[in-house]
Length: 103
Image (cartoon, rainbow, N blue to C red):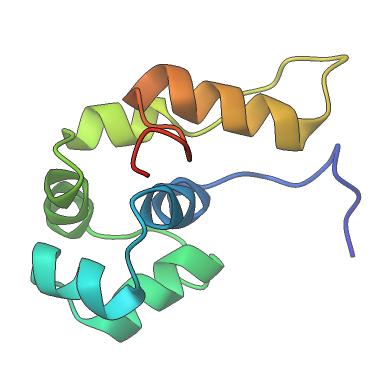
């Protein structure tokens, strides 16, 4: 297993964090985005290396985001801060969504 500092983040990580923050299940996101549940699952797991732009646009729209906002939320490198914390703060900054904001 990669340590927390070397993990490469991708759109699926952001989608999963957003889905959880919204309190949605995979079937709920699939219904809202009209994207197959297995497709979303593969994106979240990083098994789909280059998701189609239309797919990401539809998933982003389910969260009231643009595909650009979703892409901007993918954590970038900031030395000295554990990746997990960088990811959470960058997703929050880029989307305005926190785990507390949807409760």
